[in-house]
Image 1 (cartoon, rainbow, N blue to C red):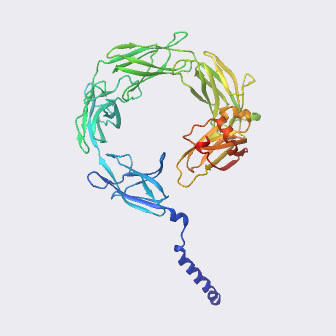
Image 2 (image 1 turned 45 degrees about the horizontal axis):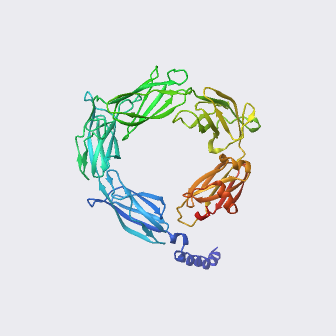
Image 3 (image 1 turned 180 degrees about the vertical axis):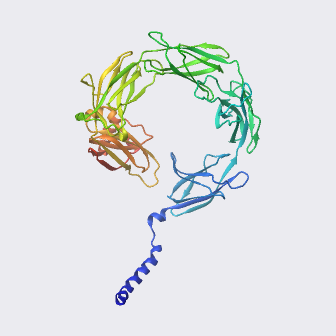
Length: 526
């Protein structure tokens, strides 16, 4: 045994020499990486603890998030293993603001350590006060908004807070400037018929008293009382257009400076919004049952007047049917399916909704109402897009374009959707240089001319640089795959006429994954 060990000694010694030489052998991947470090200070010169620092890669036209970290107890931060390129840094912390959205661009070379990059945050100002009701009791859970006044008289939302059990709020981290403070009452599950109030208790932000905010200073005693005020009113009824029957509906009113109110109709279809400042408002009506079609309209409200506005809704269309797998195999009850309808032509009321969906029952049945007059394209949503619609029939007749005609007050029954799981996946990357942050659009086009004419069969995906992309639920068959800069508009016809020779040809097989590396077309090619 001793003799064998002696025979091994030269080999062991040689290995030790090789091991000692290992650090001097450069790893080309590691040597290319660099490092960025610095500190975050406040305007008072003190380190900002646990601030968030973001690293973004930039070019002439794009900015892409790379990584984020937190400063330590001394305000220091470090980004390790950073690829060469051009970057900016962004710092943020609660209670502070920055005069610039990011640093000036910095260039990191191979293996370089950029250090002593100091970022500055400024302590923001504070507005604090109390919100009470007409009896002087605290309003708990109210939303308080800090709206900074601009030179043109408009406002920009800077921060929000909620009142506590005392009705007290505190808005902090505000940049210096002039502010108005608005308050929205909590919903508490009831109709919100009241409007916003602005300090010191007025209806309009144009009537509010501005509050001057300085960096690091606190404006106290900004109290707001919700007392009854004589504002404008919007009232009316929601009824069926044909019969005049009241409709149970939810109405949402939105307007100037974050004003969003909602209410529901009563048993007679009546609704009301109280204490409104004058202006132009958008009112949307959503029926709570599917026998009517919703709508939305603009309504002008003069100062301190009562405006009556009725909504007459048309009768809705319905579709009903069932979903089955090809060969009449039973549906897997564990797979949740959703039938979706997208309106391609609406002949209904102004502002009628355009997208509808309903879950498929365990037995495959579905029923969708509330549909406007017009035409709608049908699609199916399934987990991981594991199915596609192989056939659609209505009353035994095939519907090749998957579009259905809808008539008010009528039910389109006997809608049969046949699904196939004969699908695969296409995964891959765009073949770009390291560090490329260009956004790309991937376009997957069927070779079959019949399928190609159906725009619903043409698929798109988006990616940035070499980030992977994926197409799921692709029906088996042959396809052309193109990559193009996302900023350039692409017409499918032009793409095929001018660039078919540049297409990446793909054969998709059932339940298989195709991996591809595709080169992008240039702007001048499009």
